[in-house]
Length: 455
Image (tube, rainbow, N blue to C red; front, side, top):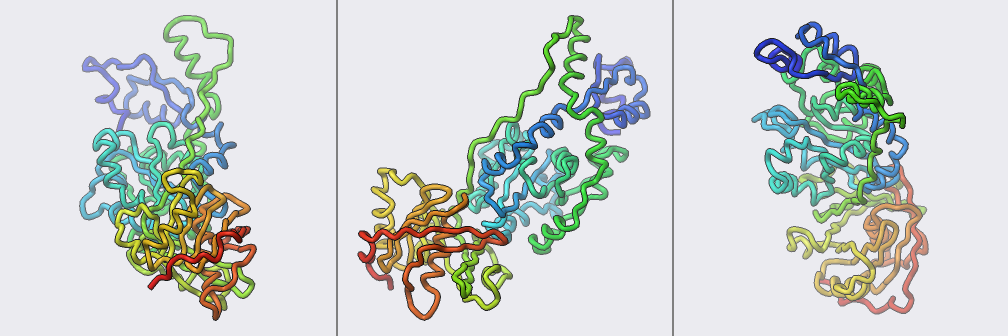
C-alpha cells in the first residue's frame, strides 16, 4: 500500500521511524492497521490544516475570482497537475493529452465566457525550472492562461474555480471535497493505493475526451454535476479543528504546557490582481440585433474556424460579422498588418505613448487595414478612435475587458447600409449570457479629424 507500507515507515530494525504519524480521517488509520500494524501506536487523528484553510476562506470566493480577472458571467476553468510521469503534465508518450489540450483551452473556449488558469505541483516547477515551464506554456499564456503561484495561490484559485480539469492529484480531490465539478484528463490507478478514497474518486470521476470539442463537455459536466459525499466526508473527520489538535500534539511531544490562547491557522492571503493579457490575435464574431444589442464572441488564436456562426445572444435575425483584434505587442508583428482593431492596455497618462488619442492616431496611420484603435485604461474604460474620425470613451457598468466593447462598437458602426453609422450614446454588449451596458462619450473636439484612409 503506497506510503503506508513497512518499507516507508519502519527502520531496518522494525521500529517506527516517527514518534507520531498524523492522519486526517480514521479510514487512513484503518489502512495503516492492515498494512503496517507495528506503526499503529504512533497514529494520531488531527484533521487537515490545508482543508481547514480552504473552508475558512470560501467566504472570499468573489475576491479571489476578481483577483484572477474573472468577470461577471465568466466560468473559471482551473487546470491542475500533480507530479508524476503519468500526470496531466507528465510524459506518458502517445497518451499525453496536454500538448493537444493546452492550445484548445484558449482557442475553443470563448475568451469572455471563460477564464483559464493552471496550478502545477511545486516539484514540476523545481524539476524543470521556472524558465522551462514558462517556455512550454508561453503560447497559452499569450492567449490568456494564468499561471498560479504553486505555493501561495493554488488554494485561492481552487476556491474561485467553477470547474477543475485535472488528474489523480490532491488538488482534484480537494476540489471534489469542496463540491466543485472535476473532469479528469489523466488517471493512473497504479499511482494510488487501490483502497484509498482518492483512488475511489478517480475511478468514478468523469473523464475528458481530448478529441472532442471542449465547451459541450464542460456544459455537460456542469449540468450533470452532483457533489459526492465521499471526498467531503473522508478528507477530514475534524473539519475546522486541525489547528487545536496539531498544536496539542506538538506540545505533548516536546513536553511543555500548551498556551491558553486559541490555536489558529494563518488565513489565506488575497492574491495580487492578475487580469488576462491576451497578446495573441483574437478572432471576433459579432451579431447585431435589431434593437442594437451586439453579441460578441472572441477566440484567442484559433487553429480552426469556431463552430458558432456569429456570436449567439442577439437573435437569429441579427446581422453577423467578424473581425480581427490584435494587441500591439503581439509576438508576430506581421499580423498587425491585417488587424481590424489594434489594442493596447495601460495608464492613460503613460508618457511613452503621449496620450491615448495620440497613440491611436499613430497606430491607425501605421496599420492601414485597421478601422479602430482602442486604448484600454482600466477594467471599465477604454478610449477609441475610428478611422472615420470618431473619437470617444467607452465606460461600462461592470468590470471586464473593455476591448470587447470596442469590438461591439465597431460591429455597431459597420452594421446596416451605411459604411459608418452615427455613433450611438449607449451600447448593450452580450458575452454569453451576460449583458453589459456601455456609455459612449464622444469627444466632439477630436471627432471629425479622420485618420488617413486605409486601402
